[in-house]
Each structure stands twice: as C-alpha cells, then as structure tokens.
Length: 121
Image (cartoon, rainbow, N blue to C red; front, side, top):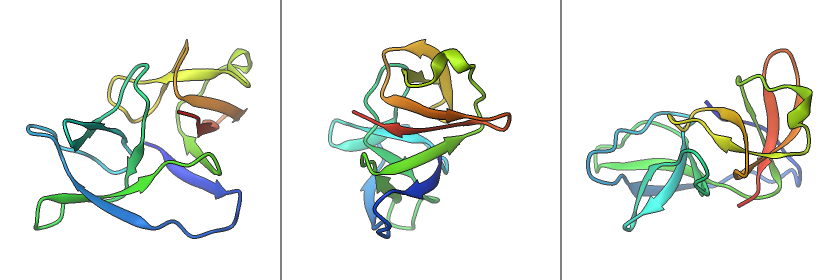
C-alpha cells in the first residue's frame, strides 16, 4: 500500500473522484492509471497517475490523489540498497514495488520498514 510520507511543498492534497473501469475493485493505497476513461489498477511498468484514497462512494466513484513530483510516498516493500536512486516497477497488485528497473517509482530512501520514493511518470 502506498501512503503519503511527505509533501515537499507543504501544500494540502485535494481529492478527485473517478469511476473505476468495469470489473475493477480498488483498494486504499493502490496505484492507479486511466484506462478507457476510467481508473484501473496500475502494475509493472505502467505509469501510475493516482493513488486510491478511500472506498467506493454510493455513486460508484472512488476518491483518489493525483500523483505529483512533490509528493514522497512510503510502501512496506523493502528493497536493497541497489535500488537507491533507481526507478522501479510496481508489483502486480499495484500496492507495492518490485526490484525490476524501468518503472515509474524513483526510490529515494530505504529502511528496514519499507521504501520511500516519488512517482516520476
């Protein structure tokens, strides 16, 4: 699950609301992309555009945070120091990372509890 660690500009983050693609059930903290005009899980080398920020509303839309380069995120995925400064791919469930390079998440720090970074694409 991706959580906001810090906002480098100190601004608050507005929520946006979008319907999910047919057949998609989204979960809190999941990386998302736009697919055929709706939001869907992002994985692998996909370019994530949003993070799911809550449960589905009664009108069928989900609250999401739009990704920006001034927001640093944390995920419990623990990578090795070899991933420092590298852009890595998203896990298949859209809730974490893999050590595979060529993704949209640039690793800025690694701790024993997880990985920090910024979505770049």
